[in-house]
Amino acid sequence: MKKVIVLIGVIGLLSFSSVSSEVTVKENTKKEMALDGIFFLINNTAADVPVFIGPDPVILKRGSRTLISCVIGQEVSFDNGGVKGDVIFIIESSHCGISLMLSNF
Image 1 (spheres, rainbow, N blue to C red):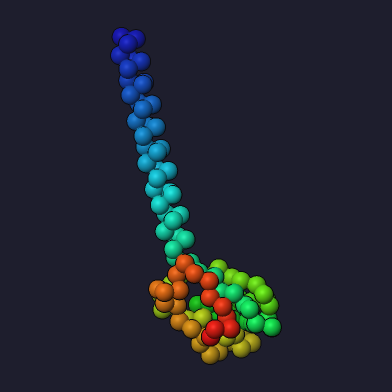
Image 2 (cartoon, helix red, strand yellow):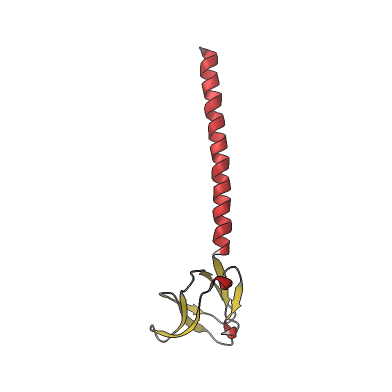
């Protein structure tokens, strides 16, 4: 009877260890996919630039960069005193995973 209980316990522990390695692999895959879904916008101009990234206002300080989710079709616009201004660019799939310079737009 003791051998049966020990055998069930060992099988139970082995099943947990294989599940945890599967979870680790899945988490690592999600992290890699997330890195492909972002890009940096770098303010390489001589001034602070207030922008809207989607619905959110952001001030890009001179020389700073911001991390942006790569949502295809989302607009990045100038901020005119809390109101969306002219569109700087629309996020495309080619932007994902790279750094963009604000002065290029």
